[in-house]
Structures are given as C-alpha cells and as structure tokens.
Image (cartoon, rainbow, N blue to C red; front, side):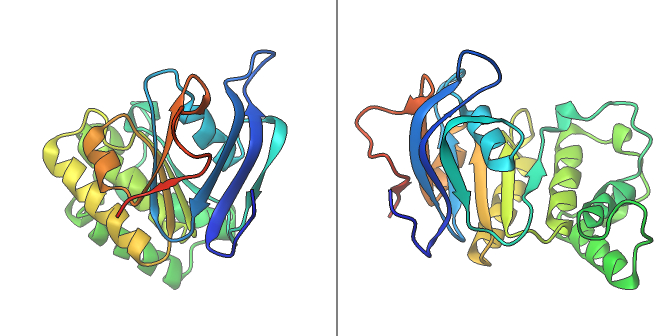
Length: 224
C-alpha cells in the first residue's frame, strides 16, 4: 500500500493484540487526513483494538503503521471508564488537556486558560465548569472528556464509542463537533457500532473477526 500526502495514517498487513493470540490479523487500511473515519463491525471484531493501535497503546506484532501526524493523538475514552469518585471539576478536567502540551507540573498560562474556556463553551459546559465531574449525567461527562481532548489541539482525535448510552441531545452535540473539527483539518477516527454515527462519517473501515471485512478493499471506503 502506497503512502500518500493525503493520508494521516497508513496501516500495512498489521497483526496486533495483547497476547499470543492476535486480535487483528493482516489488516491494511488508509486513514485520510482531515476527515471523519468510522471503524465499524460487530462486537469482538477488533474495533477498540485497532483504535488502540492508532493510539499507540496496543502492541504491533507484525506489519507496520505509519502515522503522518505532527502531534500526539488526543484520545477520548467512554465516560464509564472514568472513576465515579474522581474529585475533579469540569474545568479541571478540560484543563488537563493542556498538560499534553505543557507537562503536568507546569502552571497553565493565560493562553492555556483561554483555550480551556473556549473548549468549555464549544461543548456547552460553561455553566457546569465548577461542578464535580461525578455529579454530571453520562452525556455531560462525555462532552467534558471531548472538551479535554479538544484542548490538546491535536491533529488526530481518537474516540472509542463516544455516543454509547447517551441521550439524543448529547449524541447530536458530539456528532456536530466531530463534523466541525474534521472540516477544520483534524483527522477524526471513532470506533462505533452505531449505524447513525457510521452514516455520518466520511470514510469507513469495516472489520469482521479481526480482519478487513470480506468484499471490501483493503483501504478505507469513501462515502460520497
């Protein structure tokens, strides 16, 4: 597979997993730059594992991945992965996104605080800024985690099932922001089993049993 200037990530004959038995086998795909890509497939197909490979948290056993991005990925986990007793306010949570740029032991600058405030506004969280994260609804927590990722100002945004279990308003708000940041040049990759999320994506990577689904080319399929 040839790497092109328009690709943010190129995956070539990749095998990856957590132990002796790989989860992904001989996967090849191209993730286009500045688009929203959905990784789709049934439960157990390897969606989250592929997302982990893109994030650098899942080891590659064979093949290779070339990430043609300038900054470390910003990762949005599911809100259910956050400890319910974490004593952080919404503002603190979003401000943590600046640590990726400055380091956790350096004080935030005026510019960092302005970016934090802008991300709170973008996700309609300003009125909740002083609330503790554990007092929020699932949709509000997920929006806070997305705001934290946006505060990193990365050119690669990775999300694992971002709308799972959320109310319709939160799903719509997240979908709108992902469309906007993709249009602004950020490469967005989300693992999802939601047909509506997949339908909104610009491109798809479809997995089945740890491989690119039969009948599809070994690259991302473009939508018109």
